[in-house]
Length: 197
Image: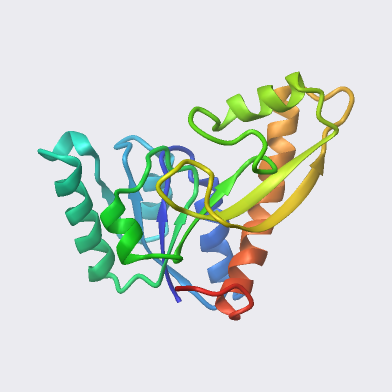
């Protein structure tokens, strides 16, 4: 299975997918990486792994439509079967959602539908979880639609919130869980236990 990964910053989830492919836990290949941030670590990780990588931002184009057409052109060039958003900080254009309907997944660092939606990313999520006095949080993998964090949930993994947790310590444990969990879930997608398309 050919996977495209979209990431805006560190790309550690993307690295987990790449490593899962390399050590044969996944019968798949990351064929292209796309980032809307020219300085993202994700692009550097892709370069280090000899994976084709593209900086594609609306700043480079006349319109969102033009950007979407370019992204679709790249995805078609690499015969992409599935798209994984691994810390990608933009909504995908409707043209991409339509072309890859039910084949686009996102990983979110909380148990949706709690702590999701616009502005709920990164440390904002972990701050909100601790401020709400939650006893558990976790990781959600869901299909992507036109509204942030509202697509069909396909898998969740729980992480305990410890009494002395700070947002930083909680974030570190959730991220560790993300790395193993997303490889498990992608393996289920490849095996046909979670349907594509």
